[in-house]
Image: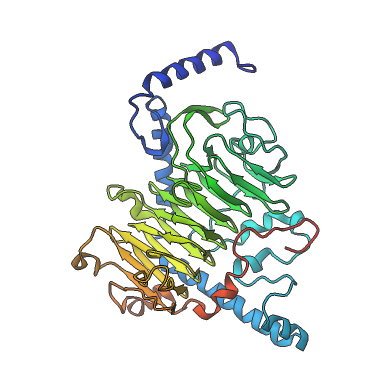
Length: 458
């Protein structure tokens, strides 16, 4: 164990012995923590819960209206630009995207189509909307450049690797010197105040473990691809500069958000993970997932892992401008407790259902396009929604509302709760409706990792 003091080596040997001694009977422990490391994470969890209470929005409707207002403003600006363009430009737009940079939703319009984006990367941090709007990531911190795709040392990560970057205690904006595929040997445990910014390179996380955001805050993950993720076997893993511990087997989620706050996932392409693509549990809140492209997966998103985890009452998540694409099956998302704003997404594929839940979550579906599967693939999967483990007499009181959604190929959304609730509370909703679902194909046109190149508009 080169590079460690005699005392550090002694501690490591003791933990290794303990790990193998317990391996035959260790239970499945929440967040993959072995008993020997429980006290540390209990303290972290208590601190995280206090942050959840601070991040929670007591009037979530204000966040809903704020996002919708920005979408309407963007669509108005685009319409004015198109009307003032010459006839050739109008002809190109009428035929679809023909090459020039286009930013078709308010998040993208905040930073895209500018040649100097690489010199002004921090601009991205001011563009978030929805419940994750507080996420500033590594803004105003040091730029850390990943130049090594290896992940060979979990206890003493090599400088220049992604694992070395994410365990630093300081605020960091993490970029990549070149295109690379990173195969993580075990779950990548992040510290707070980080941006992972894949712009300027093709950054792929694949064929190994993936991200664990446990009891952290203020994270942005942008512009990367994640696919073919497998569970990590567990073992000794460093989670920060001043802590390492024993972990059990990980689940194989693409991104796991556990007891964390102020998280923004934007322009990420995801497919084929062993468990979920994105899971958020254990009182996580203040989350926006936007401009992402999802394909080829069964259980796409789980928000709230257990009926017994009542802390998920504080969970608040925005899904906006995402494309739920080919060969998806279910859970887009599947919710317990909490408040979920699903707005201007394109649901072009599902084989069972799109949105499900239990334990009375509030789900506000606005301006989405839902295209049911064709009869030859899933003839009985026309319903967008699914309530689980609850009788109709119970779930009819849950607030699941569909406002301005577009339903094609026989798709339908079974609503519940007071149909006049929003009209009874204009002081909360400000009477601002979502952008029309007919414009979803434009709002989501550039979902997924963009392939930005330094020195060119993105």
